[in-house]
Amino acid sequence: MAELKDQINEIMLKASEAFNVYKKVSAEKRAAFLRKIGEEIMNIGDELVETVMAESNLPEARVRGERGRTVGQLNKFADLIDEGSWCEATIDVGDPEREPLPKPDIRKKLVPLGPVVVFGAGNFPLAFSVAGGDTASALAGGNPVVVKGHPAHPKTGALVAAAINKAAEKCELPAGTFGFIDDASYESGQWLVKHPVTKAVGFTGSYQGGMALVKLTADREEPIPVFAEMGSINPVVVMEEALVKDHARIASKLVASVNLGAGQFCTNPGLLITTKTEGYEAFVEELAKEVAATKGAQMFSTSVLRNYELNKDKMFSHTEVKLLGTGIGEEETGNVPPALATVAGADFIKNPHLHEEVFGPFSLLVVCESKAELLDVVNGLKGQLTATVHATESELPNNQEILDALLEKCGRLLLNGVPTGVEVCAAMQHGGPFPAASDSRFTSVGVSAIKRFVRPVAYQDFPDSLLPAELQNSNPMNIWRVVNDTWTNAAVK
Image 1: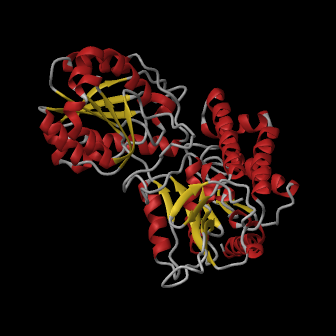
Image 2 (image 1 turned 180 degrees about the vertical axis):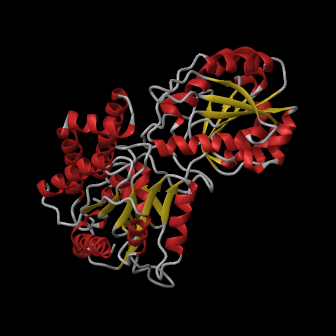
Image 3 (image 1 turned 180 degrees about the horizontal axis):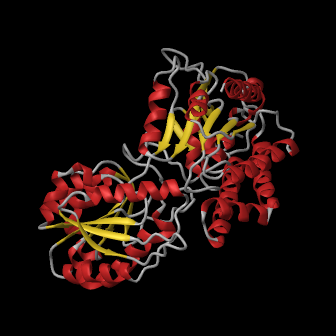
């Protein structure tokens, strides 16, 4: 352990030294580095795909898709840096003639925080792991990154880490710009987080893991931010007219979403909510029929499977929870059948243990006696990554109170869809009120994720030659300029 602690100390000190150089690297060079990482990942070829499949039980199509997403988001961050507006360069022009006091010249932009520690996620061996969104966004912002690889896929992590270091070498970046720790112990994570040069932490995983990191950082001499995405049950509300007109299609989509990837998505719809109105019985019948015809899939590991079975059994230990239906499992292949359960709205409201996440192909249908009870169910929920509403357009205006309540609980509100499938785009918000995330102001998916690892700095009365390039008068980038309290969004001429 002492040897490992020394290794971590050396890696963090190298990251600190690299920060002094990397934070000043031009936007063009940082963008080229991100693109080169993507190229090196692709250069690994089928070896990477086969390694991920062997370590995660994921099918080939899913792995290739996730590899494409990983490279795609690296390129999106590169495009963001090239465009330039992400750093929010703002020039508030001084006025020495202003009365009664001269106005200083103040110019502000976002700057990197410093070395960032990232914890690889178990359920996304590529897109949320070593070169995933946390790493890409931190590097894009000008921060060195040290990743603690997830123990579920160590060989995958090592391959991707080597690709990043190869890209850094080809781009002539300092040693320490990227570091990688392959260790399964809790102690290594604690040492990384508590190291004095660490300035922020990125995490995707369980509530218990995320909160442990939050507490560790709060107890440091210098507290630092933890950007933790900690899971969700992602409520889906099915309203009255939708039940009548579209119950079969809705049931089919929801069961498919629950079972997608053996339910191992943080956006898995783990809670379905509806009322006992016309169409309700037909909806329940369709749910049972759909799940009975659905074939299960393998989970990532025996430990994930064990936790799923444990949490599912705990859910059924509450006598008010009844089995609605199960899918098709295959013991010889390890395929885990999806399962649906049901409970009355009043019982769900009274028992907070029924609000807990069952990570896997499971969902709980809450049946309410009235719209008022449904609203009580929603208001009793904790923070969520997503919330979904199935409704006809005509009934939405009469259910604004429910929509407003859901909006207060989530980071992304969907209409007539399913929450699984998180688009990597500028408008995505993947985060939510606590405990879905440790800070609801930020997203871990999409280019806005860069905002987690930067901070604003203002320069007052500096000569143009000493300012960062983004704040100089000759800057060709799109910036905010303020003259006589009038805002314009254009380059300074």
